[in-house]
Amino acid sequence: MRGRVAFALFAGLALAAACHGQTITGSIVGSVVDPSDLAVAGASVQLTQAATGAQRETASDERGAFRFGGLQPGEYSITVSAPGFKKVEKSGIVLAANEVLPVGRLALEVGAVTETVTVRSQGVAVQTASAERAGSVTGSQLENLMIRGRNPMSLLQLLPGVVDLQNREEKIDRNFDIYVQGNRRETNSVTVDGMVVNPMGNNFNTVVMLGQDAVAEMRVLLSNYQAEYGRSSGATVNIISKSGGKDFHGLASYFKRNERLNANNFFNNRLGAKKPRYRYDTWNYNAGGPVFIPGKFNKDRDKLFFFWSQEFWPLKVPTALGQLTVPTALERAGDFSRTLDLNNRLIPVSDPTTRQPFPNNIIPAS
Image (cartoon, rainbow, N blue to C red; front, side, top):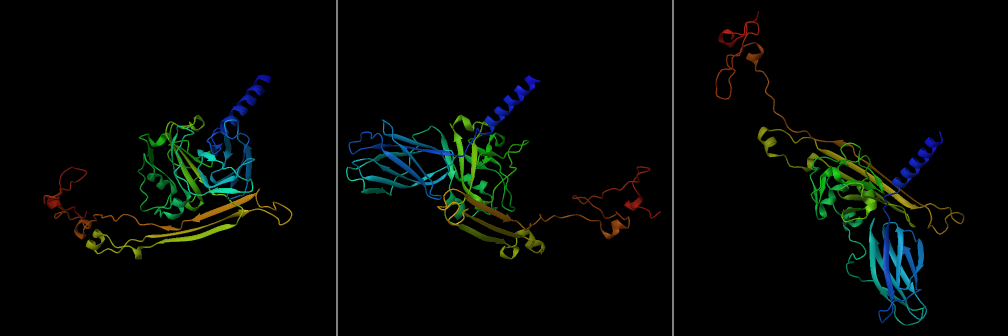
């Protein structure tokens, strides 16, 4: 009995460790130097998240390096201060999911601590902190690019090495059929906020998916990524949902597709057929913000937040135009004397009891 209990405890601990193997958090790394490009040890480095106002603080080490780990994706700013130097502020630092983001060497200028140097413009960050190859679909792309099928997975085609074979021209869905770096679609791992959503069967669909307006960003780890994301042999697609912030935000949208806005196709015009019914009405709304009680709970609106999103799909979709061959009036009466094949040859009709053709290819009324 003790052995079974010990085994159960060991299995539970192993499962717990496995459940926490994949995360969506990232890290920001950098270093602090003086005007001579020498390391500044003990400098105070403060990190602030733009959406929530949450702050973290650390000090540079003897090499002037600093690191903030376990950060949620989003926009950040950094403030560096040290005795005898001006403060340096660097804003607009956008951290993607699972990213180790280097912010470079932050150079301090000699001066009073009350003076501040603000760094606004910056070049494209070069990944020097890890060897991974990754790509991101940003929040602005998700908000500003029109997706006919309202499926955020279709935007992965914008990334190098990603091919999407799913046909979403005439439907709205949340499935995917992506091939990354030549790997099979079954080898990809898809997560939503760190939770694996691949079904235990084909592994290339999803059991849970977010609406387009509820996705903050999508990041694809293409190759050479950390071992903690090694669930599958292919790419790892991380879908990050939106979250609330210090301020209240909301959205409501409506997308309409109707056959009245479409042109009829060639074959329908040739046959004199009307345009098929083609109606998509997509309703969407979301809201997010802080949870607080003025003067009593979460007064600074920086500890607890909420976000809610919902999307409706009342669909009336077209079906393909089909052509059927039906019996003529003579054939319904049993007269097949004029039933010909494509070469204008008579198609014989036989008596099933004698296996002999009917005279004149006409089935007797009796």
